Length: 60
Image: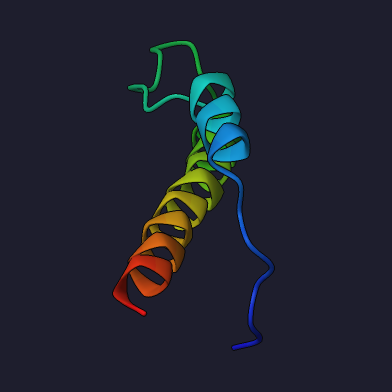
């Protein structure tokens, strides 16, 4: 996997607020459920990347 550029905390926070963890609604289509799950998966990935980058910086 290629190295990602640094992910700013402000970006992670903004995306976490824009795409929160939420349960599907009863009127959501299956497509919408998967779409929102994909959005959140990207946010979760960036949160983990941000944590790892800070551990690396603090660990040096």
